[in-house]
Amino acid sequence: MRPFEYASPETEIEALELMTDGSGDTALLAGGTDLIGLMQRDVLQPNRVVNVKNIESMRGVVPADDGLLIGALTTLEDLQDEPLAAQHRSLLHVVDGVRAIQIQSMGTVGGDLCHLPNCWYFRNGYGLLAMQDGESLVETGDNRYHAIFANQGPAKFVSASRFAPPLIAWEARVRVIGPRPQDEEWLPLEYFFQTPRTDRQGVTVLKPGQLISHVWVPLAQETRSATYDVMQLEGLDWPLASASVCLDLEGGTVKKAKIVLGHVAPVPWVSQAAADVLLGQSVSEATADLAGEAAVASASPLSDNEYRVRMARTAVKRAILKATDQLEGGL
Image (cartoon, rainbow, N blue to C red; front, top):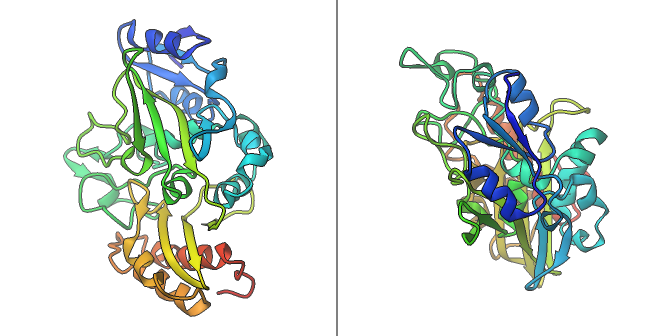
């Protein structure tokens, strides 16, 4: 690990000042579950690390504007123990799927949303686009764990955030502050992520000197939600595919649906086609299966990852059944 400056602000304004007052790259330290490893591997080489863990205003869950305001520093464990979050079942399903008490106690919601790709080419120093001598290492090499959607461009990694799919399904918004102390923007989380086309771009729209401070999620007592992860291991692992759904039912039929897939594209993948299948229909294993088929109809798997198409289809189907308490026995 290379030498770096270290700062530990106690307010949002102090953090922004430290992020902009200095030369070179600055990295934020929250839970540290991703940053430390990337610095140890020399993938990231920040000149300054700003530890934001002591900023109390960015921690906790409180009611706000007919919804919940979740601080970016709220840990997975804090979210799981928060009674106000009980109706957002799909978020709690994410926490339950992280099978490591260390990550649950240290990992944060904001850190998860900004988690960099787990692509092995990226983490071995080949950059987000994994290019060498003008060729895509993903196209010519091992691509078992890469994108099956939106992979025609140079970016072929998959978004690593586990909270993004359920939060987008809930139509959450994110508060972005900086680089100046007075700069503040509320952005639909769906538009927070981007697919880079050059090495100068990142995986989110955050600009230098900006950070996430809070996430706002609407309250909707009648909304049924669920997240389903397809995992390879029972212990600490990343999903091979996941799906999150939010369903509003009226008279037993679906009047509103939002379905978001995770870990299958460079950004969380919203499937309007799958949602359209459910509208006006009652939820059953048959309709859930049709929605799963629609969700992957436009998939374009690479040479070694066609199996992930089946996993994504299954994740969508089971998330729908899980949201309506019909998962037991569903295939």
